Length: 294
Length: 234
Ligand SMILES: Nc1ncnc2c1ncn2[C@@H]1O[C@H](COP(=O)(O)OP(=O)(O)OP(=O)(O)O)[C@@H](O)[C@H]1O
Ligand SMILES: [Mg+2]
Image (cartoon, rainbow over all chains, first blue to last red; front, side, top):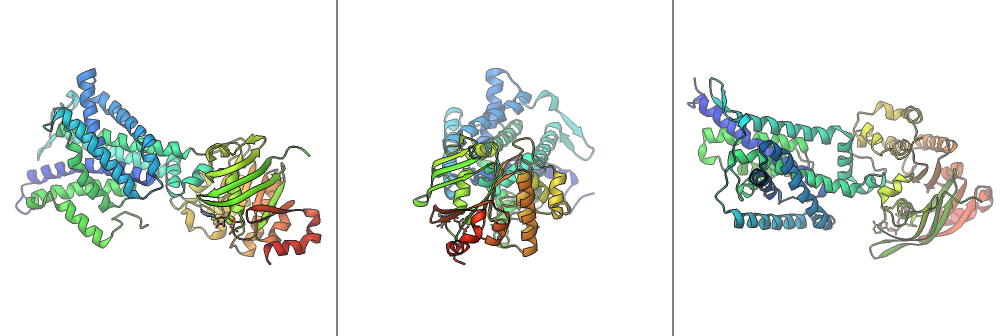
């Protein structure tokens, strides 16, 4: 049995890879969407913060002997705290200005952070082992499914849906959505909006760091891991539309799968297909597939 | 006379370079309903927003129950018991009616229960799942008032609640405001609809060019009617 001359093992294997890439696209574009909604800032530091999450996992292991499971909790908290400091000291002053200024500042920060890590650790990548509990895999008969990859897909799906639920279905989420529309009025109702903005940025950054920890055993820990990924993630965000939480999740996973399929059927285009789709979406629906037009 | 619940003295307010309020003085006693009248651009909205801390650059004194508010951020002011209902209503499009209604946090015990609120505004109960901004203008105004009644705030600042509404709706809002007064809420109301204001208010201030230029008690209304019409340019 095969599909258009493609053996099913190859097809499913690429779909799995696509799903894993999609999981990272979804988590990162989700964080960007959350930050953009609340701060009106396009957080170009997101890729560097993802990389910092992976490095935090590496440091925790090598200096404190704390393994993967600790890293999943502590790295997002630590990197998120750095995000809080960045918001308090820098981003806060840019909210009244055009998006462009936030983008420039966060872009500059990303280059600084990345440069510092590259200077210290080179560009070759440091290994990070899959935790013992998740080594090995399942033979599904038609393909071999590594446990760690299945874990990454499931946990990122869970994190994405939990974030969606938090924002769209809870009282705290109602505060966030309302403050996105009219922060002054929400504050006049007695809600500490400046603190909520700070924590939202911290949360978005923590999400990036969490993705970084998940990525460490798959892609190694590398100062450039974020800058490679973030360009694609921005394309994902453009395709999905800036404002939408569910849009970011669906577009992230969907484009991962499309990329995987392209690798099977027309490998030459696999690294560009997302950008082709981005160009088409921009021409047909500039606000993005799920975006609200301003 | 006992210390007023709200005492504004020498209030100045600025939008950047432009100086909009020039020393506003006014008082509102507990349980009183005071109306601020004045033409477009007189500074009525700016006065209310300055009281609740929504104008960044404001100077002078705003005292609520003897607490000075002028330096406080708006979320702290709200928690002392003031609630603001904006002129443009401020219904959130990304929230449904129920979420809009439940948005302002409870700041003190003794807020109105949902049963009472739905008795005042039966329309809202049927539309809880609708998107907030899908309501009619009148329903949005009801929602904007309803949501600040739940919170336990005792001083309500209502900015032109009848603006642009049909007479039947205005009547419903008037009945609601009467009931709020009976329940002991203190209300500072901005109105351009003078007929409406005379039905509910105990006292009137008239504003012109960022200053209070006159104060009129309910008892003097008939005698002062021509003055008021001149102020409002009707
Ligand atoms: N955001 C702003 N920036 C600059 N000037 C403003 C702003 N808002 C109001 N003003 C100016 O301040 C003055 C007072 O405005 P305000 O809205 O307080 O008047 P108002 O009495 O509420 O008028 P209306 O009856 O039209 O609501 C006006 O001259 C107005 O043009
Ligand atoms: Mg006004």
